[in-house]
Image (cartoon, rainbow, N blue to C red; front, side, top):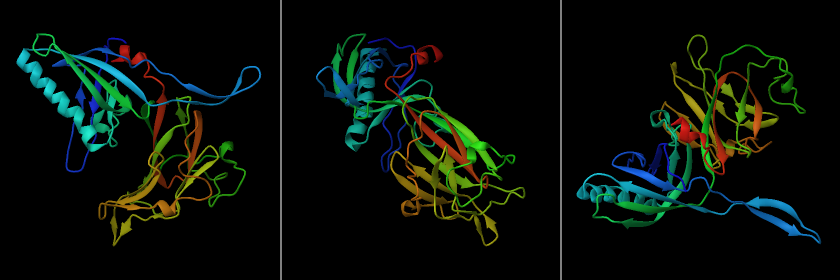
Length: 320
């Protein structure tokens, strides 16, 4: 275990009819005095041979994190603050939805998906608690968090605008034909980097892009290619209605395996799962390392990339 110098937040998430806010567990009126963030294990799934074994894969079971929190202030204030944390942690239990321990400096104000921006987080439930010296000047509370998915995750944002210069990049010479000829007239071309050694889940948002007259363009069957993999939708981004321009967006979520369409004309989200591309899976994870990104340039694309680690980086202690 180790004592922390970094910020650690707990966010119990959202539930119907309830709004919650994250709490910094490493700031007054309490602080973390001990926690085992930097421990992990993988179990080899192997087949025995006469000599040694052959690795089929590595498995990682659910994990537990133990944290000790110390309360400051008068004895009555400590008891009051203990009750606050107890009720806060119990929300995830009651809702049966995991909360998140967030390691680092989250950007809640700019975080549409509740991940804390580019900070590292792990989903968990506070399943055990033991309090010592509740009536003394230095009360402590040991909490055990159960992590059903034991990986630490960071969401990186990669944005690709609907404007740019014409490109004739050689990496767009794919082995099969597309509905668009990108090889000679590519308008949108870029790259992204998955800094994790693991393939990454993502949320991909294809949105209406304005033309030079600031009217949103109509796009038929929008598609994005990452390396040679197609993420396509059969449908139309048609943001013109009775001479009014409005925004539309299509969202592919590989974590939840959903495809949705939203329009600010009526502020409704519609299930477009059946409109997903069938040629290749639109939920395929994005590989580790650099990937090329290509699209028609007639719409804007934002990719929220969910990188994973077995433990949060030690540099977070020094950077926050």
